[in-house]
Length: 418
Image 1 (tube, helix red, strand yellow):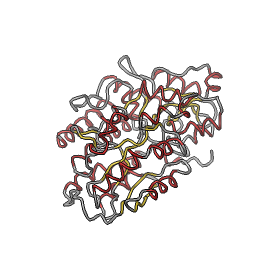
Image 2: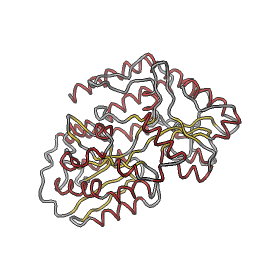
Image 3: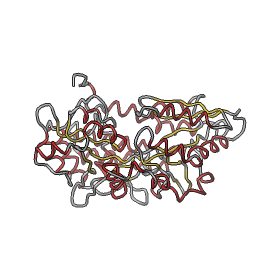
Image 4: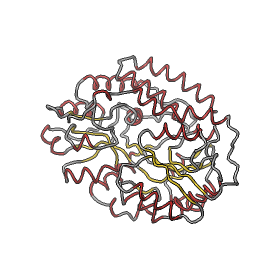
């Protein structure tokens, strides 16, 4: 516990530094002269990954690259803030030809990525419709889903039993559980060092997605205002773990006994199972308010082909080879190192590791409560609303005023993107 960094407490500035890059990049990149013309690739492809935490993933990525026979594929493995690194790299001469990221309208409007309909057409039905929709803009598919990563709360069953607490079904019950489970050095709840990850399910738990079907603001409701007010009270209550040793994607705080409940993802199941055996369970983000809903965030990764690739057709051919044709590698990537749901339905259906215990519960929660990203909700819009959420919860500013301010900025962004 001595390695806890107090300096990290809800550091919004760190979030903004991490997230501003790709969104801001869009306008600059749109001014560039390279529109992705094919030809002259020279038989080399540069592929960029964020640094997966599971041992063996980097070696696996290199193995897949080395196995490709039609071009020399080099891997750039990026530790730390991947979004910022990707944004910077895409602007320079060393931009990747192929990279993993999340669906984002800004990348399409600024002509940074190319459609991939032709390489996915024959197997489109082997992907979840939600994953296809999340990677589609104006009827074209821009990303190939690599893995699905549902995120939810982990909890210690023994601590719940001792405190007389049941898995919460509502936000009020979650707050109450956090209070009852806080004892000594153990905090009831860990939702991250900032609100970057938890802000999505927090908003979605009130009912609507960020935007409606016509891409208009849907998040701003009385229920969200009330939820942010309650989240502020939770923040002040000393039932939250602040200044944890690692971010919420890492189960270290849960494993070290610093908290009774932690938000994390399916990838953490093997490590938690090894530490606690059967003494843990999972539950979705509880619904908030009468019109709310339980939420499991599907946070996985997709792969994209840069419009600035040296040879766009060659880059697309590599993506098809790896993420369409090589089902053995796709299963290996999802299940042999970490723990993810394969994006291909046919692979996931045959994955024995997902058919029992907590893993099977995770798949069931994913199927019943999963919420996917909306490509029309850009990283820049997310950043604006995150600012409003953090200002409301951490800085005790008026949620209604913060949301009003966010509305104006996001409406301008929506109008600009069309």
